[in-house]
Length: 76
Image 1 (cartoon, helix red, strand yellow):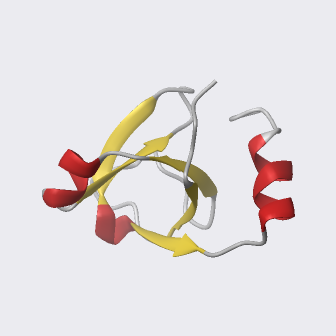
Image 2: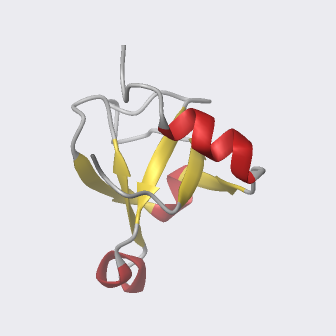
């Protein structure tokens, strides 16, 4: 299982049609990607992939909420 830092919500998907608007995605730490304006999220494939950072908003959720979300399957 991946170790995520927090969750993000997709706010645009132009050019990234595999992303779903308004869906929560676990974000994985990736400093190299961040320096280039990208973030790594676990998408529907269950794998961590890079997407433009501007496609997402970071959510500051209580720890209990993040832990509950992290325990759920990535995609159904």
